[in-house]
Image 1 (tube, rainbow, N blue to C red):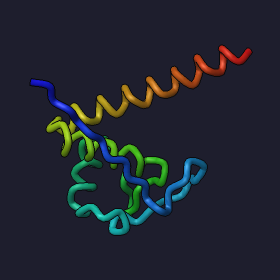
Image 2: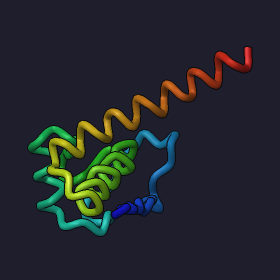
Image 3: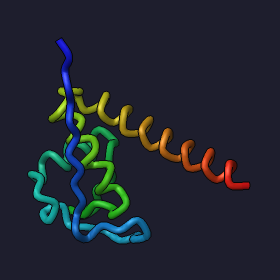
Image 4: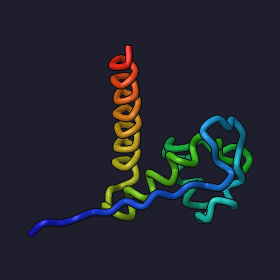
Length: 99
């Protein structure tokens, strides 16, 4: 039997790649206690009920891995790190190919 998995991609309306600001965790549509728990695990950084804008993508990615694949939070964090590393390596390969 072949299993198919689908990933949904979410984007916070306040998030942009170049933004270095902070986002209120209440605006994310996620229960604040979940975000605080992720902060306790070191997955994201929360200061004064705010999350760094550049970590919003990572937060959604970790939660998506947990919900769709049933991966525990530490495992989802490791997978998110590896996916980010793969993405940066792919960008580096593309940059080197264009030389």
